[in-house]
Image (cartoon, rainbow, N blue to C red; front, side, top):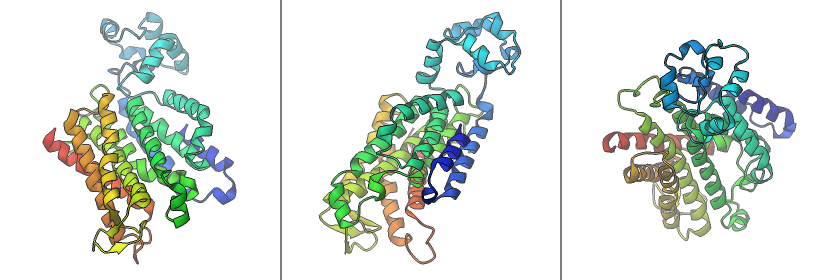
Length: 365
């Protein structure tokens, strides 16, 4: 499905809009790596994946019936070897109710094709709305991202990312015409392209893919590097998105309402929209904007740790946003750093936010 999304976008885009073939290839490579990294996640412990496994791996029928009553474990399913008719077996073994439960209520990983089907359906239904938020090519890249997120962290992680997109797009529209007249508004009417999508969410997708390996139900390990646990990776995932949202709030509110802007390195007054510029209004907006996603993720039971995790994620987002301003003031646009584009800085920004969250979480949670 991911390769299909990319190929469809390439075929449908006019030549003048095919500006980033390297990013398209990188997108497919990243998504493929995420999928391959999940090869050992298809274990019989998961109620979602047990319907896909060979019957000889079902060693305890009574255990399955007691723990996963929504699954059928009759002989017709268990005695047939895993073959090309697995889809038929799935239809026979899981009714609509259990499939819905697997897709929408489980905290375990969700089958890839089911994830793609849900995302494709939603993208088709909301196409007219999404076209106002995304460029044509960004539409297909978002479909690939949404598929991988639902596949790895389920509807909870997926909806957290969707909330980021919605709030980020909403704050971008604040006094948009005034900012456009000043020449400091986001290009393309604020619509997100592939470079914006992956610059903002690549770190989160990596955290989501890594969390599968540590998942209590389907994971193959208990920790990474001796201290990074599943809960820490979920915290890092939320923090990476919260970091980018805090940065968007700081930038857009600062440009719209900032009365006085200073360069973060020298504190000299500069024009709004200058790389590395900060303002009181933008700084306060970053603190507020960074707390929305952690609060939501905790409220739906996706991120554990309560107020402590919310505080860690919000603080990580705030610190990383200021670090991004420092990078913008010292490196971006400077000689020898022409490659340091906004998208690269955004990626580094989210990496910093996720890293701070993991570091603080390891000591406080």
